[in-house]
Length: 323
Image (cartoon, rainbow, N blue to C red; front, side, top):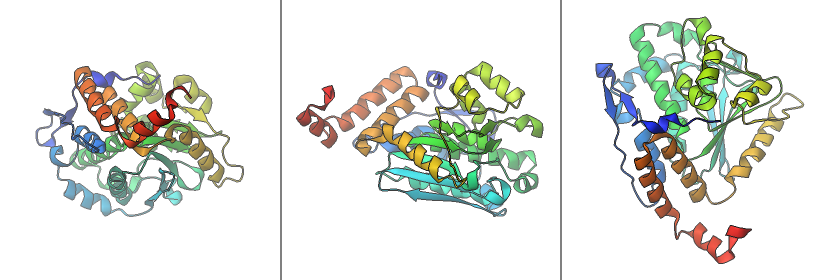
């Protein structure tokens, strides 16, 4: 049910120095085993193209500390990223926004990785932005800079050469709901909820959540979810294609069972060499976000990086195709 309308247009990157202008990104494939750099190249509303002063907004955000973004890379090739601020329902403080960007940078360089699970601490996912930080940067200029910072971080998260899953326990509200859309898949547990509450704050999503939501559930469902601030439970999530599965969840409220289930679910898709799993993610991202002719060239180039590689030669030797 995932829509791929984004593949019909060149990526446009707003340059805040001239707020209606856009930059069309040209993609050059790095060749050899540098697949993950393609995603950073097409994906960065980032570094050189930002046009806003990242150092300035980082300093503003870091003035509002609290919580943490914890990352554990496992030998299985699946990493677990935890939004950890349970005293505020795992809301993003300013420093947590900066930490998230740092964790994404680490994952971009993790060449052995195949999968990523994002969860919240203490049995709930994320309640969006910490209102203390929001109030302090409520002027339009700083709000726009924060918006661009988080858009950049979340699009880089979505384009990681890892299969990513949002493990939704408890509530994913506002920016937390937007965070779920920056993952390839969403798994919910009984009693959990995804809700875009932006309307009640006099806002619309600003971290890219609306654009991604349309591509996941379609424009009609997105309109209903946003304008009605609908509480999407697991049953509704499955019906509209927002949820990819419903887990049994924890029996003791610790989250351990749900995480184990999520790892097992994701493991069905990450079995195999990292080079192949990452190549699969790369061709899907290019097919979703690039014009067809560019996506076809990208697919050809990715194919060239795995053809004759160790995994391919081993499969040919074992005649694995028909197993």
